[in-house]
Image (cartoon, rainbow over all chains, first blue to last red; front, side):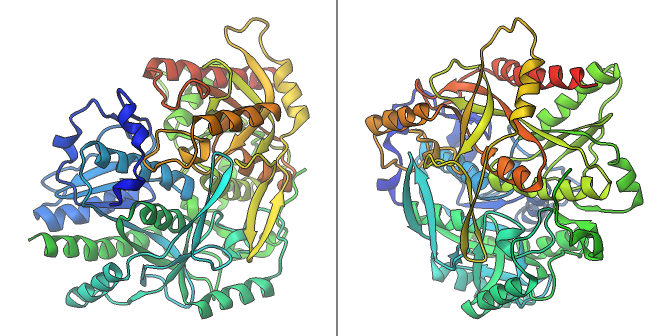
Length: 292
Length: 290
């Protein structure tokens, strides 16, 4: 982590309230989180639960027949689980919500002066020229104009941060997956937008559309040619944040629809959760292999 | 009358609402027929709690014996129905609320609800007003202090207008009880995509580029635009509802005065009390229109 970019003002606070996760710096955060080496960000609370179950099974060799796993602390906004050296947290939908979660999790680490941490984001994505169930590992994230930058308005002024992540980590994950043999895992670029419909070239939103199906097809084809294989609504800020603090990070996208074929996601929630389980097992096994 | 995507009526594929994990079948359509008002809040807990209050005040149902049931299956958002009112959660941020708005509006449109009103009941930071004040939003601004909501559509920038519905605001305003133990302001709001740097806070994890002087200037410029509060959803709500021709507004309560700090230090009881104020303003309106 690049300590120079951490906010020095935090040290002046008597107590730092991490409002959205319900913790504060007067608590014994070191004993709770002192051994964390990995943070896995998911979107929905259900997804965090599924990932936590896979991690628990692989890390401790336990299943829910013997133990139940409860999210820890405030559960109004996000759900947090801790399994071994990994913190798993759901952060809701979209970049603004993720950014709140990332800020507060990183503030925990800052308070306990624990800077050797790797972040992962795992979640569902639209695919381009890939099939539902495929896994896309990303080290390159682009905005709707295919630029690898995240624009952030701070106190009214716009700043731009790069969104290209560490290639090595993505390559390690891909290489490691060979030993497990989860099928259809590749490396690709993620397109990250602030909207599910207009910004992702869908014609099935609620609003009257301002473009044609042909224009959508042309846009998505251009995206494919650019190397984009996954589309989501969080990765741009995830990469921008991790780059500012130089946190090692990687993104795992699980494809739920091939957007070159259709807009609608038609696979069942059960299938989605099955894909999420098998994808999070790659991560859990990878973490276990380097810790033991 | 709403102005919606006319492609929806003849596209069978649109019958699965992915973000809600719901299939648009006859049972579901019946469940969502006859809706007029949609109240939305960030957290699912608050949406559920408000549903309990609505049930009590409007249907005279004792919330100690009856609990409202979540009508959505997915875990991203929750939804409760009380008569012709829905109490829904939208998560945090513009991206989250616009996802909910598309899905919910598709559902309500398919269930033949043509006269709708959307009201966000929010929490926010105030600019130079006391914690616990209510702000009714006229127009929503982006954090660079321009009004509108910017989208990148097929690689091009489009800015949509973000004025709330002024006659809905007038109606809500006219239904307020005479004496209220807190202040109500009608003015403008900022919706930021970042809780920390985007709202000029000094307590995010990343070092800010600005100093206290710059921040005071920023808040002064905001005040000059009649901006009273900062939150994270109103631009997306206003832009969506303008495009859909659905009257909408935001009633938000300030949890702190940003002129005096960044952290939300109010106790849980105070926050519950503040959140209740915004809900009561909307409740007064909903009771009057029945």
